[in-house]
Image 1: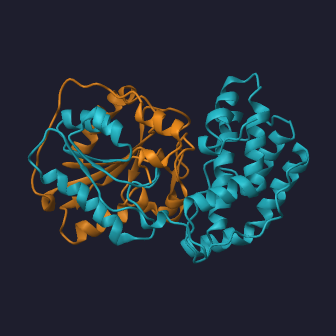
Image 2: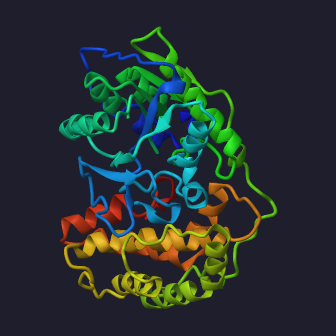
Image 3: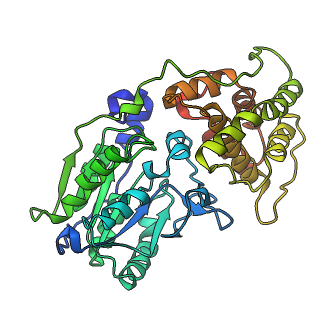
Length: 153
Length: 242
């Protein structure tokens, strides 16, 4: 469990005190009901498609994951060794619940699933990724995405 | 993820984030976040439990329909049922760890261990129809030999163009971990990550090799190598006092 009280004191202190951006604004965008939304997943697990370009270190850019990617094609290249990977080995839905998202679309709970999902490297200063995130927003809009589920590890 | 949420929302795209470290989320104040009480690496909870995963996902997605922003942070109440140990789990057989021995003997044990685990790993692949081994791009026997050669003090060159030797070492270490831990979970038992970590870091030659490399290469003149072995090979909770 990631209650900080369950972690080693040093690790808990480090995680709790990670420097976060101090934004002056609180952007807030609303949309239609969930059953009409087109949803993409953006993960910070440093995922990449087998055979393509892995994250090598604290890369600030992102990798695209086509929605028809198969479980055997998706790999983690995260630099951190301080999170569990055995759950992802057994079931990719623990990190990127693509199967669950497709089921929600089939059941009409959400409107549709994006053509492409994305992954960043989590262990970065997020302000370094700002330009890439804003560029990604354009790609998401081109795909008519109006809901992004952000998933860390 | 909270900062990414901020940027995307500024660009006009509604977001909801899963939060694993609540204080970080509280500091950044994203538009919508669902804190989950799960282990790092499991943002949607237990593997192999679609109903539970769907509940987490829906709890997050429903926040998109709320109108009481601009900052919503909610908690998911239920713990991950797979966080508990499974007493029925037994690791695959490998020779008992030895407390003493040279780096060269450990290197030989590592290469032998990879062969011993091959059957279990093949069962894993048959069971799950996938493997997460593949980061280094090397076959597992070459992966083990590459790590073993570092243990033997050879400082082998990178076998892949465009990838430095320290980077391939990190990737090969990640592949070795994935291979051993997949082999260890072939079958029907559902061990916790702690059970698997205890076995890997205390009982396997691969784990011992990573501990030994961390110690041996921290004195390297190559700054990238020092950084990788110090911080990105052995989990902080598993580092041994030297």
